[in-house]
Length: 296
Image (cartoon, rainbow, N blue to C red; front, side, top):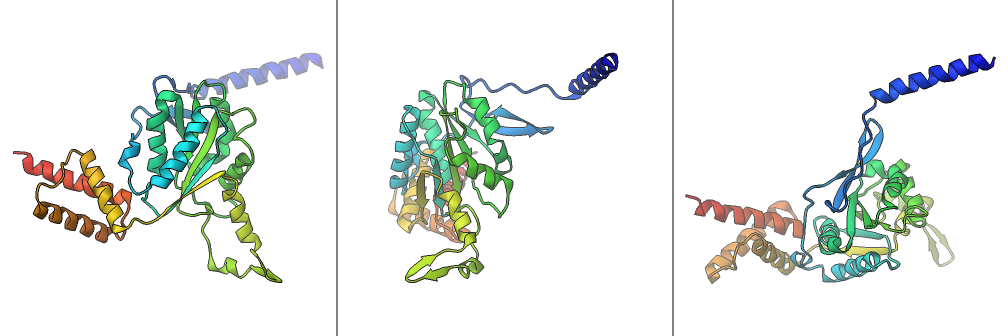
């Protein structure tokens, strides 16, 4: 009997060895001395960190009309890189007003002090504990960045993120914090029908279960930072800042300034939005056009 068991174990080990030989080799973690950002990727069901050779670098001074938001996230990030208590952050509001740009600006500013960033897609949020295990022994401070989050009811990623936010991302990963952006304050679409669940008890208003479930995720973030649509002057200020970024000097005459302003406003009108993103797009359009005129 013992011989038969030994034979079975030997055969099983041989089969496992053949299977392992067919699997792709494990991907090593990035060299964090050489890279400051990475993405969590999947290959044949196995997750790994893929270094980003040239992350999008944005200077904090390039972002205008969001001074209060800059101060809030900068203070929290300074606390984090200094090894002090810091909050998870949810940045919400109008699209294109600078949520993700602010996170990237934090990386550019604090990378020399040991800050690193790991971008995680919504579909991979269930891997957060695995990601934390990859990072917890590293001598760096990591922002796990989840961009443009919106969940449908019952999604696995929603529940995984909710669990992670109840405390730190993992018990021992004190060098990891979550920053997320969303166009929805509560990270889920809101429907009129949900208002019908609201109950009145005396003079108190009690939201229904659907609303309470949505609020229960967003309230787990320690810091909420809200963004709002740009006023016209804010949009034009952003246009001027991005034009300087692309090497375009201020208008030399009032006629040139009026033309630039008119084109910038028309550009925003065509897109139905005044935002930092639209200002950046117009600046690229304008700077590129000037470059073509100078090209023989």
